[in-house]
Length: 284
Ligand code: ATR
Image 1: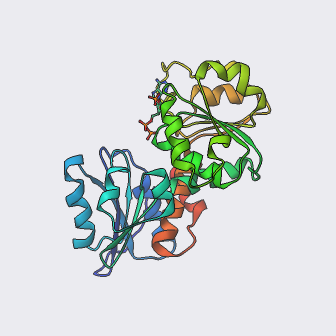
Image 2: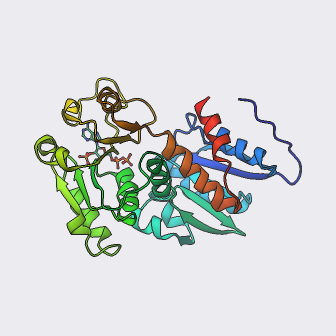
């Protein structure tokens, strides 16, 4: 998609730090949002090697880059170079958005809100719902944080290594003192018998399904039409294909990608993001 940007001495710079970063769709959809609202700004990809991350963060101040998104593999490492952290970053232990206010760098995590805004397109009322979360890595922390904030009833969290789930429970006890009652660690082989009948929503936060030959996390033919199924991977994974065959409501990673970007845009500009323009660019 062709995006027209008028460059002048006043043009502001935004960007994304990742390694690799070539695949990122953020430069296009963020620049389209700036352009649509007539904000004189461009957004560029920066391939930052892990050993150069500290220097890259310093460059935000030196070059007066107004805002930066942070992606794999820097989301955790970047935290120690920032001046201030949002509550989300403190709990999720990952930062995906930096705002530069005259050299003072504030770290945010917009993945949690991005995820919830996407999920609410399928199910506006999450309070009291029972959820199955697959995986306990970095991405799951944003999802679990957001679900706890929405007042869900139970989060059955499956992982190969359940220690990671116990760590999440420990970390979220200061967010809600009931974290150990809400989050239930569950091995994958107990999903079909003991979890599927009672859950409303199934969310995959692992990378399983990215490649066609990935072994399924459980028997997807046991999914029922009542389930709402979300995969944060941005493609129709075998899990989502199974959900579609059963007639479930389902969603891939596009809404989360869209809304985390929209939230970052709002943090930087103080303006409501033109979400439909950004969605159009993402879909092209
Ligand atoms: P991210 O930041 O994307 O969440 P991560 O922190 O490395 O990445 O977490 C990856 C998640 O995917 C973990 O929950 C991991 O499970 P383990 O903690 O048991 O390793 C999960 N995962 C990756 N490959 C997997 C596989 N083949 N089967 C099951 N789970 C897998």
